[in-house]
Image (cartoon, helix red, strand yellow):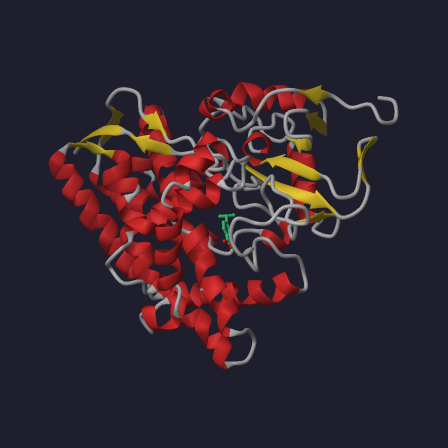
Length: 396
Ligand code: 4IA
């Protein structure tokens, strides 16, 4: 391709049509070229694994500090105080990242595992007795909504605000479309509830939230920064795992052979959950902003432009995976970008894996067959891919 020639595409990655079935669009994006121009939002797009991975690894050229949504914080006022970990670059990011990495370290998580297992087994037992239930409301949502706020040390009252807030946060990374506006209907009340939950005095001293405040005593961050880091945990940790668990249930219910393989080989829970994350990635897209002109395969992206990275498309790139659309719970080797990669790679990965694996283990131990009742309904969101309802029937 000649200099300054690039494919231009006119579809809207945040439309109902795209979000309902993104995969044919992903294929067109990947096949159009390593980097494309998206007319509708006047941003660049990358959908191939190699380029998405490379951009995520290069925080110096592909900055997060102007926000990882469509809105450019250098030009528009952010809808909330920017996150000091997600929407920051080193060196600020390095300092905050260390704090959350410590709060979510294997050591801190170790003591949670028994509770997580117990709660998963209890919930699955209850659902097995009911035989028919909603895989989202009764399992994929119910489970994280109990154990995650418990782990953080959040009071039992008012937890509904957490899901409403997540809905706002993840829609806000997209354009100010109808979906975004609808989720913001109750914004003031929801934000006030979340802000109150993040205060030191509102948190149980034995939880992960209180752990973040230890860094204030150590003089590493200010009180306000700690509060923002607790807000990051609340923003990032719930809707993502709800989607991940729901999507895994969907794939296992749809692929009877894979369910049988898991039931007969429960040691495969880790790769099964990982494969579900690859194939139906909860986080579908994030943006970066170029800090300088950057050339990708002969296309020059100017400084200060937004670049939309299609994680979900990268995770099904046939250049990277054999039979990419197949759900294969024995697939190994990782390499998907569902958790991102580079300095911003998910700090809650280990926690999310414990959640996913506890649910899949409890099901594998107790359930012989898992079947969808009718067609599950998606919950469309500008960033997250997940279900709203999913009728399931289990047999023991
Ligand atoms: C934050 C990537 C996503 C799960 C995420 C969302 C919000 C925040 C961090 C990560 O508010 O810091």
